[in-house]
Length: 247
Image 1: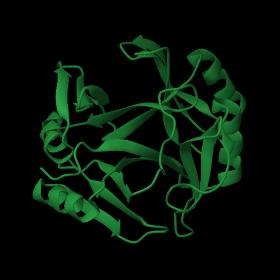
Image 2: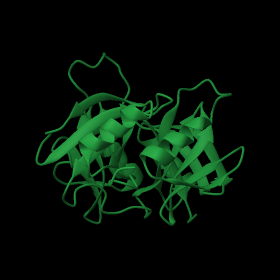
Image 3: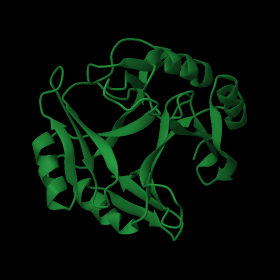
Image 4: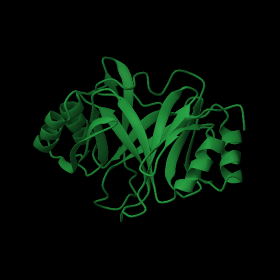
């Protein structure tokens, strides 16, 4: 295990076919303002009361026509090269790596041992989230996987512990703090992915605002151990979950 443990979520980034339209949507639905660049020096930074919570960047010009937007989760690692090496040693892979990206930052897109993708960021300043688990900010992260044995990858490579585990749900912790969940989706016809939750004051009211501004309900609200949760798609079909109340 390298010195960069435990690894923790540090950023969420929306890749959008139209940044201005996405900004308008999330401003109306989550109350986000936009100010400056994201931590990778690209796109625009979403803020809540001046605190960084997310980024929105333009899809590459070579993206297929009509490709929907999508959210990506990034994890912070101090030792970029060491982390990529450990990924490879534990049956993961680096899909793309840029060791010198922007201002003193490194970025990679990688896959875990079950081929679920996520991002990696390395930096030595205060970029990344400056607000979490508050209204309008990222609140929780879940690995939806078809192979729950991938938990070994995250305990080894990320330095996480399994805080609790049942047939339905696994909670990982970093030190004494819960850091992410894991759900078995092997009986569902959807690809494995990292699910991102944003804290809202009222799930049902947020669903109404999403529909009023060109989004839709992907999963209806339900009360869970996390709180009241639902999932929306935005004006460009990017999916993101919402949760109200405190865990």
